[in-house]
Image (cartoon, rainbow, N blue to C red; front, side, top):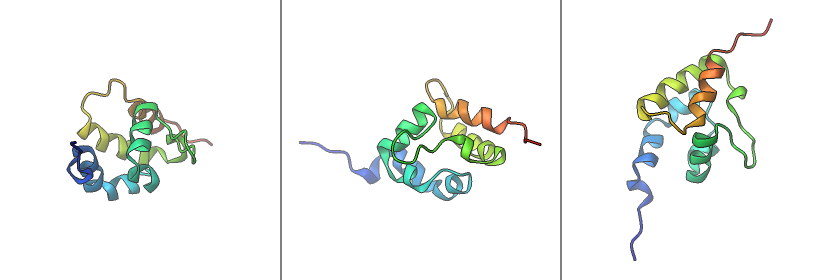
Length: 96
């Protein structure tokens, strides 16, 4: 029987390495801590589980910072709805 050690997973290691930057940019810690939730948010652009977190909850500045960070790790955005949602949020006009 084989298994993948959680600490050897490159995705988990990347999230751990960039945890503070992701938190500062508005990503909730409960998304970062849960592999299934992280993948869901990355693919669908929002957390459909308990919190219903979505990029509209963060400032356009935070969305821009998160987008830059995620693009550095995911150069091919195809299928990653979170990047599209962050781009829309980053370009949102402030309400008057």
